[in-house]
Length: 173
Image (cartoon, rainbow, N blue to C red; front, side, top):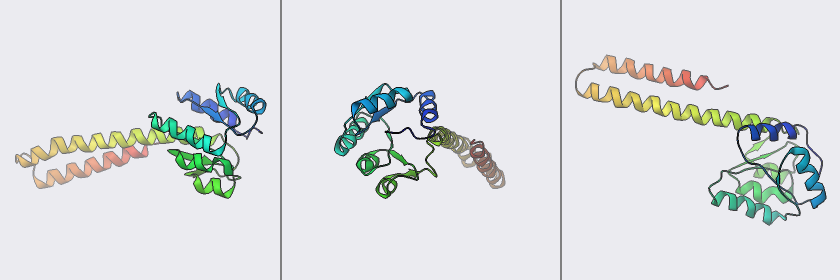
């Protein structure tokens, strides 16, 4: 199988984030071994049928892993559909693109690493914003109920909390 543009960069970025990578291909062992070596992927499987790819994704999910599947062919659609998140390049078959959560704008795989990084940052911002909102409620509500905060002060504090959450979300890079 040919190596897509940006594939090496994507694998490096994913590994740099501490994530495991598995290559599961329907191609012959020699071709898959050579591809895995070029990509720096130690865990690979060759000769996998479509049902075996889907079963591998299901097994990883059942073991508690969050699975990202990247595929472009008809033989990948079941696995793409079973993954937590699935990505296909724009040049993928229609069935693979339909089964995917994300379709890249071209063939370049490098944006996959960026997508994972941004997703992680987004999750952290969401958790931070939940914390900010919870802190506001833990502090402001009892003060208001005890009569220590006027309705105007509570409204101003709520607005400040909303602005803080919005500004925190804007820090996403």
